[in-house]
Amino acid sequence: MQTLLHSEAFKERIISKVKEEIAIDLKKRMDEILGETADLQSSLLREMKGMANVVGESFREIERKIARMGEVIDASAIEDGREKEAKEQKHALNSILELALMTKGQLLAEVYHHEQAIKQLRSTTSCS
Image 1: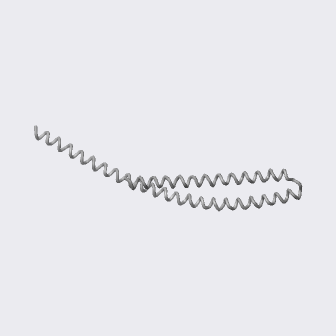
Image 2: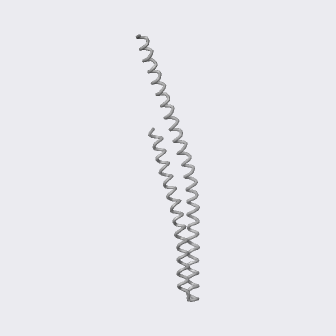
Image 3: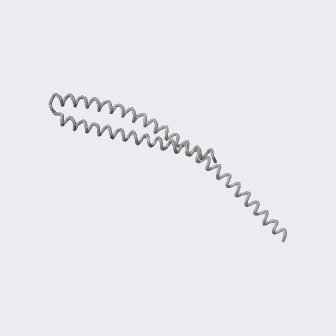
């Protein structure tokens, strides 16, 4: 009877030890996965920042072109006496500029969101 109790306690200790080992292995693997995920997020963020720079350059070019077009419209309207039509054309140009601004803003918001996600992943990995 005592041998049976002793063997049951021995089994319980072995099971407990195996569970501990499995938990440690799982935690290590989760940390590895979180680290890999953070690395992938970092790569994506670098790409997005590159895109944001391109969008920023494009936006500045759009601003310059719209400003030049606005000047041409103003000059033409003054010469031809078409101020109302010029106002409508400039309104259309401003709509294009607003759309470009929104696109740039959305991209910058995505970059910020990914930066925050990476910080969260890194802090989760380092805290574990």
